[in-house]
Image 1 (cartoon, rainbow, N blue to C red):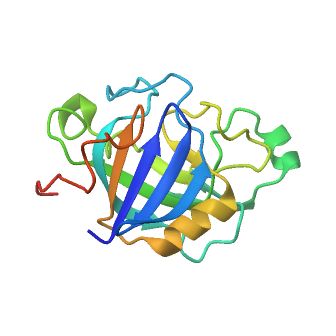
Image 2 (image 1 turned 180 degrees about the horizontal axis):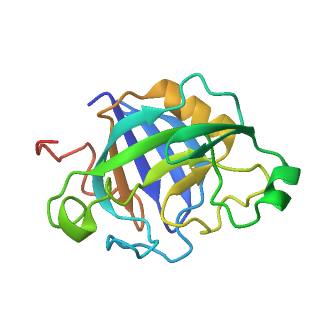
Length: 176
């Protein structure tokens, strides 16, 4: 496996491993409702996932996405004041798909059908503090770096304490 993204919910960190080398280690913000896989829970799903789709390759920093499409807007604090209830998805989207049937794939626990992403967010949003609606939010500069470093199919492990100590490499070999 070339790249592995590990998300540690307790520490609110995302790490990118290229082989055995730690290539990135940044603060994130996962769901304010904690961990969980149930549709409608607004929780961050745990377990093995893959990057199913990558959206926004040529989008400008702070480009606003709604329904995985750019709106033509560029985020600003004034835009936030105009639309205070928006869930701000900015700059890049890495759309996740669960790899564990019954846990985070298929039925009412399907990560992809829940539209769970790793995505950029407004610079004023706090990192290191759970605050999302289920997704993993990152600084825009960090999501641009991550987006450039991985390809669709890259494996992602989301766990309470990151990757378990007894797992040194991706172990999931299921079909996508």
